Image (cartoon, rainbow, N blue to C red):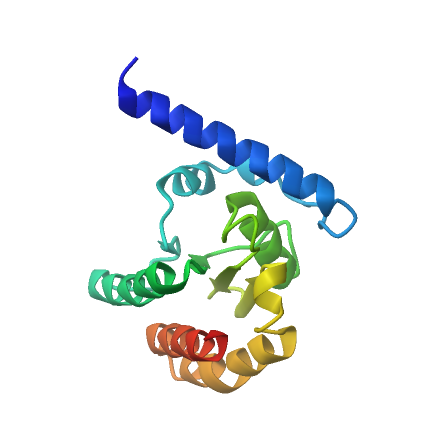
Length: 180
């Protein structure tokens, strides 16, 4: 067996074990998933690749994806905090995008398991919905009220003008500034 394969197996095993112990500690707080994300091929592939921008609805140009990825990646390197952006064309069978974002974020394991410092932005353009899911560590700084204010005052006005990239980028930059 190649050394790379052994390292990958070790990493995945440790990751699963840390998720299991974390899940046991917060079992009463963990939302029950309405949808089994493991059955969706595109989500399973992305979880393994660890992408920052997951543009399933093809909203962003390659240049926009690179620029947004660079902003988020640099912040992650500087702070160890993780931000993931997802665009999708449906949240079915969910009706609440916030619940979808939270369940997806938990499934992907966004953020450091010990610090719970992840943030996931999910945008569904056909649904005309956007949600921000925060880890419990993130929520100590970026409260639901702060995230809602960023959505309502920064992101949505750009969306109304058809500027989806500008809305997401400005929202990410503002969230990063408030998170420092």
